[in-house]
Image (cartoon, rainbow, N blue to C red):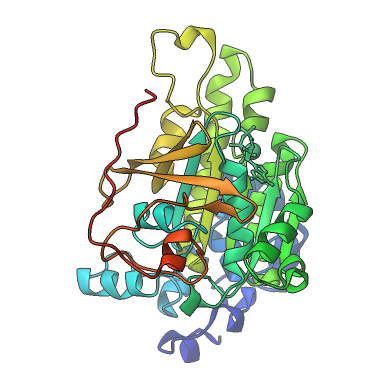
Length: 367
Ligand code: GTP
Ligand code: MG
């Protein structure tokens, strides 16, 4: 029906109706709605297994709906064509935004901050600063793009009950921002078990639209699954469920041009005595899903962040600290030469008046 008129135009996701999809009429649309699928985008990112259960249809029928939804998105240029030229890919990368972490040093490690269209994983032991980075991002994301923010609200999925609005308020005030608007722009969801988390992730597209969020934080991605799927026998099941969730997250990050930040723990069980204690939990499933993996570690009062996995970042490390401003630079640390600067990160080095010639190449003595 309306496909014709929409096929050539660069329509927005919001203009598309689920009944614009080939083969979907009012009855199917209602079934889909009852299963929580409201938009074309919801359907395009659904999995055939889940959908077939949700609408009580065969997996083949469910898959055909998903394919038709993706086809419509492609025809309307909402979804990338299956093959794109490198030139088009570059254009897409250019629509990518970066959000400051609050620390110049950490931003430098990330070549300017956390990226949209990507899944960034911070992992490390307890107290290494994962949740503090997440809290700081809630403040920086609200700032204008020119200042290193995303000019957007944030969805914060808290699986450990560690989200503290007071801390966000403190970080905002210490950085000279009025906290009221920032607090209003954070949609927090406290999640109690792994099924609940999976459900939230399944419906995340809808929440991203509703809250106009450009940043989604999941602190932490794995603790619930780890606790509930403890025995070896259930490991495959756990990994499969984690895999489903992570793939959905990546698709959402790319399609909605949003940044997704997840946190993860390190393996510390006795059976890893001969293994690598700096290894993130979640195995290959998480390892392959995250676009960027940053390992955080305590070093006295400070933190060391190490880029462990990235398609293009150098495998370097840096130091930062946690202060009343949240993730912050170490007082005497000099910013790297030529690094991208946000005005959100407020550091001692900035106050000193700009960039210095020499960069501090301090090796970590604590290892
Ligand atoms: P787990 O969630 O337990 O795995 O750890 P995490 O990596 O999330 O740790 P988190 O980010 O919560 O870091 C906790 C540490 O941050 C504390 O031990 C403090 O060193 C520091 N911190 C937390 N709140 C404040 C604060 O208000 N001021 C300052 N200066 N430091 C703080
Ligand atoms: Mg934490």
